Length: 366
Image 1 (tube, rainbow, N blue to C red):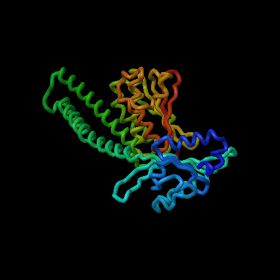
Image 2: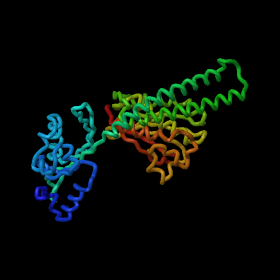
Image 3: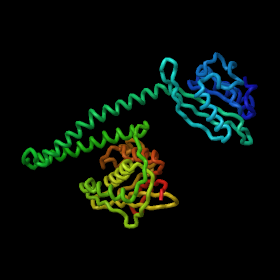
Image 4: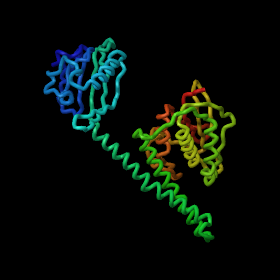
């Protein structure tokens, strides 16, 4: 079999051939194959044979897959493999749905990377194909679960919050001070529960690709001013002031205004919770090298060095030494996912004196 291998595969000698033989015959669950510059199979494992509908590797070595798959898949494979071979750019985890004659749909994740010789010339490609049908079924079940949570949990919690607000306002008659205090505790905890539900839903939506983004030009400064005003009520119980930096500039980016507002709001609420009473959180907007940046500066204790690599992880706050400030531990993870989906970048750095500056940047439209 290995006499058909491209020079770049065999030039390292018998050890490489032995390792390759083990790779193809070790029972690896994914399809594995090598192709030459003309897209002909050089070698392949039994899983790839099964996907092609051939009995043995010898039935396909030296041939392309063009006559073994549907015309649509053949055109797709020719196009993407030609791009890999000509440009040397790998194709990573391209997801493809294949509908069988009985109506069943199978899902596959394909990766194809160029093979190069010692001079760096592309001499063929290496590919793997993984059956992700079970994962797709689990993803669909998760979508149904999210919908159930939304209806069965978020709706009644919202109703409870509304009822508590009405009672606290005196709609059902005057209440003694102890009862008002207890209602306040109930409203606060209902709000925390609703934030947790909303955060879980948002995180699952953005990770599964279910979150819809309506991309349009957004006036960043105007949106920042709007969110500062909207979050002042949240900051008041913490004794924290919110302020726009006097040198904040105007700028326009392509984004979903609702999701960008969510990003700003999450950064503001995070800064408020970690700032001491009497401090202020400052928000700035600046332009740099064709991009528009939004930064939020708090006066909190800063981020421990050992914790910096985890700051955008799910439930990261629960592992933080400063987790007593409340929150779900999902806010920054959601922010990172949303920013990435809108082609932006997020980061943080220590602030001068004390605290931390979180920033997000997006390409500028004008």
